[in-house]
Length: 585
Image 1 (tube, one colour):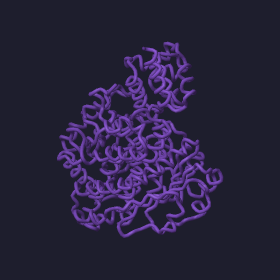
Image 2 (cartoon, helix red, strand yellow):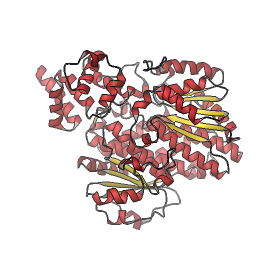
Image 3 (tube, helix red, strand yellow):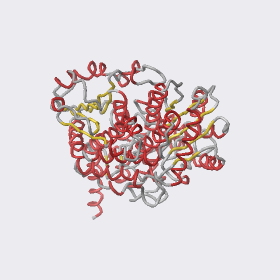
Image 4 (cartoon, helix red, strand yellow):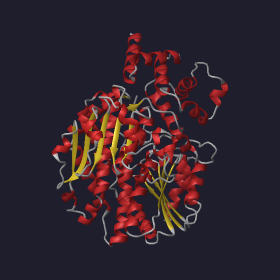
């Protein structure tokens, strides 16, 4: 059953990856490459990232940013989002505050992530549905600032947390310049009621259109096409978010502090070169997917180790696996060498919150190293040829891989590579970039290019590994966590996609799975979605159980037994569909 033509583009199925769950690792990487190319090449007939409208909007945002950077003591540049968007807000803040410090200027970048700093590590999605809390946090964050550039990131134009902040900005345009960053057309913004609020996201966007016409706000929404795994905005949308934010603020910094003019299209094209160079190593990336899949299928874990922002990219990728694939918090984890000293979050060191907030290399050595088995996988991330090889690499008997991002002049020593079972060497095409950009710009942003390359590689590894584990059916995440409003409606849509039932019937099957009963009480049916989410969030396999029950038209207990018998969701669903077909003959 295909998606409705009215379905938001970010929720559509990508035709490139319809059968990705039966592909080999090398074919998985090739399909992901095709999807990522759409960021730059465009999708369908929609205005893409290089369209005149988008480029004009980018240039106007650069002008506002430059004004604040000229006097950073009094102003603020705020990035805000939920989940992946909030994590990218954090790393962008870290990057550009660091650059301001090097210029001897006051850092003026700030990030907001729904759920606070815990959400940088583990999913805190319920708060994404609270526009009032979003507004309150924005007020607190910008208190005492006279001029604020606010960028609210919500890939599907759907997060109520961001809607509340945009609405607050539009009430005070003397102080705020609001920017909405997402990847659907305006008319596809979510138009569902928001609990305890009097507006929908679409109504907020319509107001922002008027604000934009007055020159007091912006909508930045290039259409880059559906995600390779349906709805997984951590992938293409996350990559495009990072590219657009960095293009804006590299351009603004270069203008203010170097007196140079950078054409944004040229800078974005440099990321396309990085994308092409990364996927040139698809054979080696595929080998890492195979290793990672072996780990997960053996009940073992994947660990990303590194330093500075490359390690943070690993931590971001790891944090996305539980909500995306129904993974445990231990299946994929990231560690950064110096811990919170390299990870400057608003709340400081929060390792006291539990083991999943213990993030330093010393924490890894103490907590993880003694437990490693031969099927666990360590992936070391670096752009430094002088990598320090310690006992973790030399002595452990688990699978070990190295991801090295260098340029044409750098090569990882053979004696280092020999310590790993597999190495992915990506060569950044710095010379080619310098044909269209000042060398000062390309060299000065090598770290950003390395981060993007690592993101594409790690997204491939974690996605491919979960495909090999059977977490994907066709290109749909069927084991999605029902942990916020967006995911509740996505779950209903998944059930409807593979059944012949109405929306109301699909919602009923979802509620049966959530409440473990085939005889729903009136108060359960009538409860607000927030109550359903609170009940569903801590549970496992809510959507697969509901889906199997809906397809078989069977009780939820029967659906659970089918899943217990087959374990792998893809197999369970396939066998269920075969049974339905044979019964019909």
